Length: 124
Image (cartoon, rainbow, N blue to C red; front, side, top):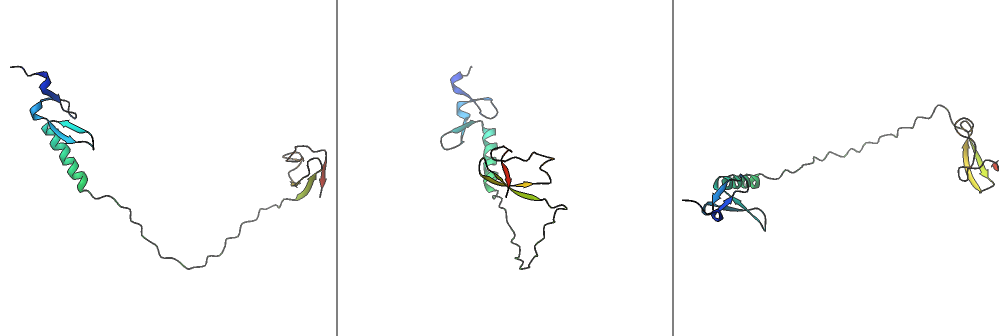
C-alpha cells in the first residue's frame, strides 16, 4: 500500500517526511507556525519552557560613598625651555599673529600663516 505524496509533509527542523495525521504545529511568531514531527515538537516546547523560566540578567551597580576630600590641583610641569614669541603683523592682509623665534628659521620660514607671504611682515 503506497502513501499519497500529498499526505506527507516534511519536518522543518529535522527534514524527515511524516504523514499528515502526525504533524504537530507550534507557533513560531504571531503570523507563522512550525510544521514539526512529534520528537522535534517536544524538544521545541522544552526549549521554550526553559527559556521563559530563566529570569533576565540585571546589572546591579553598587553606589560608592561620596568622599568630601579636597584634592589639591596638580601643577603642570613647565617645559624646560620657554619659547620666545614675537608679535607680528602682515601689512598685506592685515593679520596679527605670534611667531616663535626659536623655531622660525629652523623648522619653517617666517611668513604670514594667513596669506603665506613674507615680504610685508612687521613686528608689533
